[in-house]
Length: 465
Image (cartoon, rainbow, N blue to C red; front, top):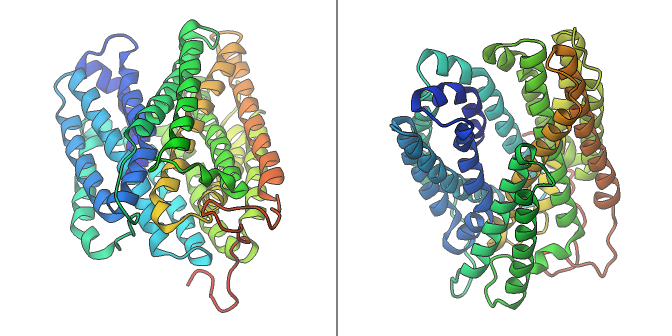
């Protein structure tokens, strides 16, 4: 539901802009308001799971998401819609890491959790596919309000079944104390970073706004680190980052998000501006990479139980790189089968594989009472990577556009695909250098104990049972 909501709105923006009378350029805040509150509060949202209980906070976040969805659909002015979208983002920042915390508690680290994370990734890809397939028809047939109303029956089902089906998660022992100073500084830093890179293609990477915000975000991150090092109850215990596996997995997750979101953006622009696809035709024709992502995630979840996540990460990044390099061959007079289909098939296969591998790596070794926090970090890193990927890919495409005709636009989009392929190749190097790194016996995990070997499947566990 969270992924559907972050994608489906893109297809309804023209209708929303017309009906609510947004000022020129203002409709982007329907997206930005959600993404900023979502990305900025993920670590804090994850921490609430550790201090107050994952199941409780997940259900509370889901209820808030449903209420905000209703107000989004009922919005009578642009200000009301943007405010409701901010609340939706806050709810999503609680829902996502707490849901993963429940999953981590339900399935023990090893083969069972790896398969569960594969299913998790596949469901996310299904959400992206559904957004592409239903966004256009719902907007055209029922009205843009219904892209928000469709959340209501899902929320109702979760609230009805959740208390019966979901396990309680352990809470951090001792006094439950929040870290308000840490929460404020890291939230502000992430929000500034995401906003700066999102606006950079419009105002310029060398503009005073972009540079100023990036410097401010860096300063806030330094202040946050100092606060956490001195706090008795830190929001993010710095020992978490002593594990090469956790650090490598999160770096890989950020690069995957850069390649995936950057590639998806350029695909959308090429299909609609060069090939002339409508929103509905675009959704139907490019859903192939989301379908392949579902398949890749489920296949990888089974293979990772036998081979471990490291070879899956390398294979997935190679597929992602190969698919994007193939897409650099787009032609202004091209077509779906000759220019998009095969590249998207390979690209989509890599999405599923790399998400599964990066998620497993970044969550390995987490303490049960800190599962919400590490989930929040994992999701925050993904959001930052997505913002960077979109901003850099669009900036490169704009810089290399040589005209307003199909050929001129195609030059820019080809360069944009090349930029995303560079992201993916950097991810492949990261997988080789960091995820193949064999720590010495002196290495410590996030839990403060000797780093464990990568979980492998027990011989008696049937894969995919």
